[in-house]
Amino acid sequence: MKIWILIQTMIATLVFFPTKEYNVMPEDYGLNAEMITLTTQDQVAITGWYLEVASQKGAIYFLHGNAGNISDRLFKAAEWVKRGFSVFLLDYRSYGKSAGKITSENDIYEDTETGLRWLHEVKKLSDSEIVIYGESIGAAPAIHLAMKASVWALILEAPFTSLVAVAKTHYPFVPNFVMNGFQFQNLEKISKIKAPMLIVHGEDDEVSPFAMGETLYKEAREPKEFFRIAGGHHNDLSELVGSEFYDRPSRFLMNLKDGGIKS
Image (cartoon, rainbow, N blue to C red; front, top):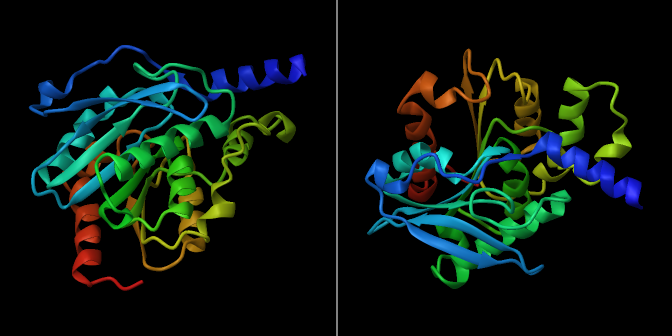
């Protein structure tokens, strides 16, 4: 048992790269943020920012990737706020001001479920007003939540089919069993999601291969849309296409609301 715990701890350090300090603050982008502290069912304090827009079109529940913290995603949140969406940025345990440590994928699921409950119970948002946005490894909890909630839509940026598959791509000699605590089996779940889905992926993604995004898209239900970014890597998509990085998903969402896309 001690050896297994040691292995999972080692895997966690290879997968997650949290930072505690904020690099920028909401006011640096002219944003007003409500600092949120929530307690998970296993009694871990996690934190986030809620950027509320008056007369909002809806709320983006933003689940970030494996490095940094929510401050590194403020530039994306600011663009969604400009387009009339409130944004909830949540730090998983060990990221930013959140306490605790990640010991398995279930910790990420617990944290993000706690955030969704807060949107329901405190902000009084219905599922149909919430867009779940999963960036890179954040696609895994985003998919997990979208299986349980009939949200407005699911947006996945640079997703992967499973963490095991990603590991095999980069470390082909790592045995599968060491990843048992961090499976993140997105491909097994994607077809169960009823929410409309948009996948954004760069053709030259060096972390989550582009083919993984294509595979997820193929298995996803309609309505769906694939935003293919030529020459895009894992972390430069918004830089390459500029405002279209936000405008195209925004059009997708508003078409859904206006009845232009049918499920």
